[in-house]
Length: 250
Ligand code: IPE
Ligand code: IPE
Ligand code: MG
Image 1 (tube, rainbow, N blue to C red):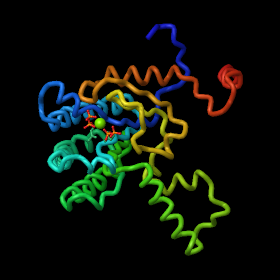
Image 2: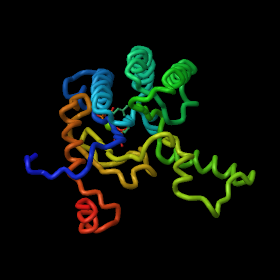
Image 3: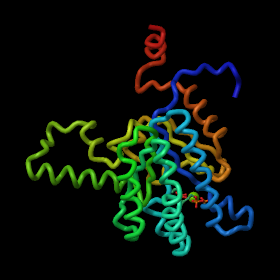
Image 4: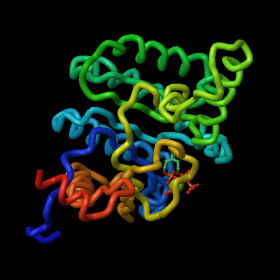
């Protein structure tokens, strides 16, 4: 990137990442896919540390989609074990660093043990004021909207909610991301240029950044590149460029 890029935005407050490419990373090395997932966890740690240091408010990581159950049983079960062991290993350190841990997705499909570890991690860190680290697991953007519609419909039936006065901001409150700031920057590693049922509603005005780097090779420097790219983007939200420039010079 050239040095004369004019930075327009400040750092993103909320970054969400589709951590893709673990399997290919391992296959390229003739290793089992789970080794790629293990390496992927190391990349996730690097991102968490970077965001903590840079005082980013929220980092949301897509760890397991509602469609990933379609994978071979052994891979799914190893990913679940990795989730438990990572939480058990890292929780104390995250807590010391003031990280608030959240898990979004349909947790009812998880083992009793995993549900307990998640509940414990969320409870222990609930009042922390640092980075909000959200892991999306058994998450689907359509599922998120469906559960929001169900909750809203129930309240409409009991008369607690008036459908005629419903605003888009009200809808935000029913989504699993209600406690998070607006999504600014979406990153997908691994070369695919699709959303794969991640944060559908929340992506409305996020800046999109795709890189072919496989997730285990993604590191702080690469995240910084994505952030520099984000800062150089002109976010117009429907305005004209002249309006934006005029506003900046005031
Ligand atoms: C992302 O990496 C991790 C999960 C979906 C759990 P992949 O496992 O999808 O890696 P590729 O896309 O097969 O390389
Ligand atoms: C998306 O990656 C889900 C996660 C990274 C957890 P996938 O590898 O499952 O997505 P597709 O299948 O390529 O769309
Ligand atoms: Mg993949």
